[in-house]
Length: 444
Ligand SMILES: *[C@@H]1O[C@H](CO)[C@@H](O)[C@H](O)[C@H]1NC(C)=O
Ligand SMILES: *[C@@H]1O[C@H](CO)[C@@H](O)[C@H](O)[C@H]1NC(C)=O
Ligand SMILES: *[C@@H]1O[C@H](CO)[C@@H](O)[C@H](O)[C@H]1NC(C)=O
Ligand SMILES: *[C@@H]1O[C@H](CO)[C@@H](O)[C@H](O)[C@H]1NC(C)=O
Ligand SMILES: *[C@@H]1O[C@H](CO)[C@@H](O)[C@H](O)[C@H]1NC(C)=O
Ligand SMILES: *[C@@H]1O[C@H](CO)[C@@H](O)[C@H](O)[C@H]1NC(C)=O
Image (cartoon, rainbow, N blue to C red; front, side):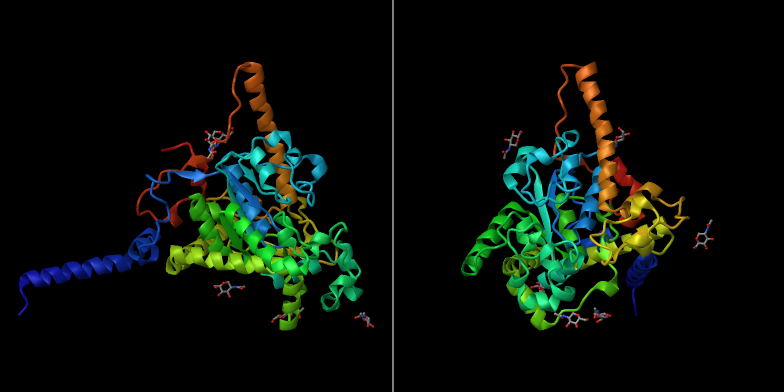
């Protein structure tokens, strides 16, 4: 015989469980995280009330870095941050492949919060323009896929590759020294490109390579708080988000600057071996930082990371639905894209770089503004130009305020962080509108 008390308790338990099940669809991620002891999706307000805003993202070549750059551009724009942009004669890169100099920065984009355009890394020169609480981040890619991508992308652009008969990767790898000249213009696309971008020596004599690579990896690790890995892009974004105390909405993205799948090659084991040998410093850097990425992911907890990745992808799908009505905007080869604002730069007509064309009737009543949807898929050259334009206007109005209206006024210095918006505990992050990030800094 069951006592009434027991029956009552069972009833309470059953209804609690059914209530939870009923809510299953939108069982908030915060609750799941709580159960799993994951770090909160929105860091506790007491310890990290601020989002970090002073960041150098070293944009490396052919590593999905355009996608990360686009994330930083949009974050900067939403939060009125200043993005350092190159002076006109540097083109849209900081006079790459020259080593970075503070003179390459457009004066109307000073003092910056964020640096994210291509440059060859120099810590001391960046320190001259960046606040001392700046966080350094970069991204690497597996050397085989990376080199295959460089070889095909710069096939008609880089002299080393132009010399190779029939544009054959096989032929190049059989005897790279027959085509490669270390001192030649654009030679950095043909060997240890990541090492070069990071400011290192791509042509270290082979007897010294191992010692040099170890020392160089240690230097990079000392300066960069996070080295993302392209093969684990979403997992890297989770680490990025935690490092900067950003919201999930801040790291939503659509892949940028890709090739048509048909123009990608497949590598044999032998080719991969040759590529790693030819790019030995890059290969060692990659292995080092892939290992440290996984160490960091383990520290966060792989189950927690997996959940957050899942949530990111869900939010991404929702964003795509809201921006483009369900499907991604159509992938087109760059040559076919009619909207000039959306056509990516191509090194040659032979490389099928794809971009997006906006559907004519992209949803309007959705949470995201048409402008923000457009920016998601806007290639870097066009986006850089727009940002420069906006920042020049802002610079002039500030200059006018400071020097004409209030001659004694001080110029504003970047503080390094902005206030987070208030977060209602237990509210599903998915339910929050993308617009809310716009309020960063104005509340709480
Ligand atoms: C950004 O600047 C614009 C124009 O000056 C202003 O209206 C807006 O509130 C600012 N947004 C934030 C997040 O500071
Ligand atoms: C960073 O700069 C601020 C002001 O410019 C200064 O007060 C502070 O001591 C510096 N911190 C470090 C670690 O150099
Ligand atoms: C280049 O292609 C031509 C014709 O396709 C072929 O005859 C020749 O052997 C190739 N050369 C090399 C070095 O592969
Ligand atoms: C590479 O392999 C994929 C599938 O494994 C195939 O679809 C693609 O056509 C191959 N590419 C080349 C260039 O052989
Ligand atoms: C990266 O490191 C992980 C963990 O050690 C390993 O499983 C994976 O194979 C590595 N990835 C590559 C592309 O080397
Ligand atoms: C929007 O696009 C969809 C799918 O292409 C189409 O069915 C629909 O008629 C379009 N609506 C308008 C108002 O153009």
